[in-house]
Amino acid sequence: MEKFYITTAIDYVNGAPHIGHAYEKILTDVIYRHFTQRCDNTFFLTGTDEHGIKIQKTSAAQGMTPKELCDMNANKFQDAWKRLGVDYTKFIRTTDDYHEKAVQKIFDKLLKKGDIYKHSYTGLYCSGCEAFLSEKDLTEDGLCPDHQKKPEVVEEENYFFRLTKYKDAIIRHIKTHPDFIVPSFRANEVLNQLENIEDISVSRTTANVSWGVPVLGDPEQSIYVWIDALSNYITALGYDTEADTETYKQFWPATVHVIGKDILKFHSIYWPAILMALDLPLPEHILAHGWITIDQTKMSKSLGNVISPESIMQAFNLEIPDPLRYYMASAAPCGKDGNYSDEDFKEKVNAHLANSMGNLLNRTLSMLVKYFDGDVKPEFRGKSGGKSELFDKALETVKEVKHHFDYFEVQEAAQKIVELVDITNKYVTDNAPWTLAKEGQMDKCGEVLTTVLEIMCVIASLIYPYCPNIAKSMAEQLSYDLSTKLDDITCDNIKAGHLIDKENIKPVFLRMDSELADKSKKD
Ligand code: MSP
Image (cartoon, rainbow, N blue to C red):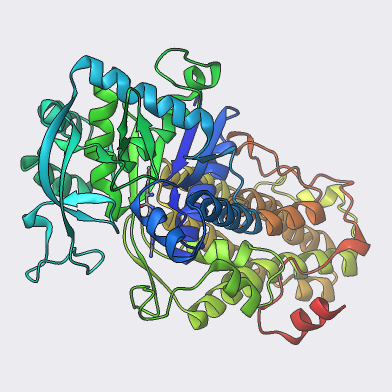
């Protein structure tokens, strides 16, 4: 793989980040970190979407200027991602000067090409979607189905983009690239939407929407949010229609745009059309993830159940984000909806990370110290010369995990890792190294323990994208090089003479409700 460029949706900054935003950023970060284990040339872009009527109204209601509101909330997003270990390469804000200038040029280029034209229009505008809706999009009561609000009737002279010109090319692209829309079951939805598309409004009058990027040479019109927002994926790389920067050349087209299913239309219809109009190549994949509910209920301000990732971190007294990352990333099969509940979070994380994985490492290392003073002897390679069925299984799991990530199946990949942990636990139970030690079969006992430690090195690499801190702690205790690329993984890391640092053996993760966990936090 020569390069890997992944992006998230850029979040509206009319509020603080919630667990739905966090889900997407974590999912993306897990995919990104996995591909850093396969490729040296990677770029991860995220950011905030700061223009439009929603920000204008919210800032006015809060007695702030739009820019003040944007600055305040953009910081909250950046802080949240830092806390969650979201290791982005670049954070773009659509109010960044270079982005605004590039968007103006992109708009101007499309205008000069004749793909944007001026037109008087009466439409139904939903500020929640920041989009015009057609009658067909509305519920029986005339409400926006996503925001349960009556759209505003807007009568304006706006600029329009000739979306219809690109309709056939987009249909052809989707049909000839079955992996363009992931998961593929959503492609039909998009093809149906394409049947009824019309040209789209791409500007608003500044009289109605003043908080936007002004059209070059027509300051009465501001560029309406989707052209502004979608362009971030190229402007962040330095694209501005004239100078293609090195970064742009290196990374465009994107490998994958990770977005929620609610904005798939914008990414799989509008964005490809804009790119075609600019004569630019299309992204390889659009990954539309599902929706996260809280206790099986859709999050909404009116229900008062909007929760932030920080509130979960605090409620469980978490010092590292790994448990929340692991839980969120494995919350749903690829593209399907998932759910967050406190109980399930605690149960799953305790079972998988503390009881199965953490405990396996801790007791194996402890036994190696107890029986062998932490010393790995050459005899431990045993009669088999260090071959084990378990090694085949571990290397097979690496392949399976890679395969799932090729299809962005993050939950499914996590299940494979858990399976390997379970099989390894069973191997320990079946071979009972404590009994072997009691019976004086020391070489055999050492062979069992080092076999398990070999597998733990593989597990540290595989779990790293989900739990980078835990993986680091595992690798330190195993003296394993976590920067090993997935293609270079072997089961030949725990060599004779390998030193286990006796003083440094500690649980990599304590059960969330354990007394020990509480005590260690107080110390
Ligand atoms: N600003 C636009 C995106 C522009 S991308 C060029 C937007 N912003 S948003 O703040 O409303 O949503 C940002 C992302 O968060 C979207 O991908 C959206 O699907 C996702 N989520 C928002 N709430 C969510 C859940 N409850 N669950 C999962 N993801 C959700 O749309």
